[in-house]
Image (cartoon, rainbow, N blue to C red):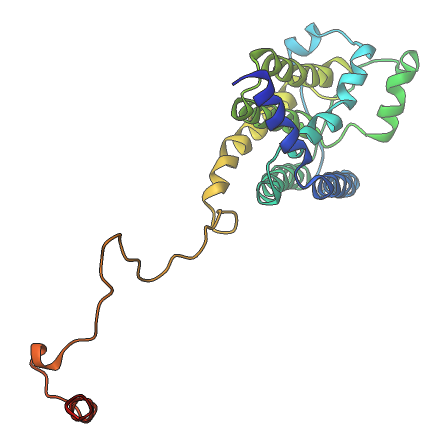
Length: 261
């Protein structure tokens, strides 16, 4: 596909149902945060502390990764922005809702938290605010990672449909990987949280194309006529009683007298 062709397709997708996409994205993220913080403060059982691994200890603290962490909310907005119509938006919303619901149910029924990293957060004022707002609970699976992986796989499929040059797919991959890395670099999650979140996001992303076949989201064509004549085919005529052998009715007798008269 030429540059002008994929750029036109990209513009067409970005302009389709733009108000609907903006409202759906804003309301969806807002509803998620309301549910997230409610679950955070209302666990149904004892909180399990996730263990550290050697890989956790190998990743150094990096305050500079904080912008990458927050960029998730811009990243996930690209998923609906590149959809073609409201039907695809509804299907995407159903998949995102499924991902969030599974994660929040796990948090509610099996509460987890990150361990004490023995870090003086006063040395990192940019991260201290995040630690105060988002407590160490709701750890496993990492929904930050789950949504990053889900969005990354979804965007890769869309970029292949639009036939953007390969470097754009590489940018998408690096952005997704950067968000995943940031959750470890700012000590918001441990490796086990990341693996669980990635598995959840990938599972929903692989399931997502199957929503095309659901009746509620299937594209319906115009109704087809019950009878369609092919070219050159004569319209069927009423049966002649004389030919069919059926006894003539009163209407047939009356019609015969009119013709003979």
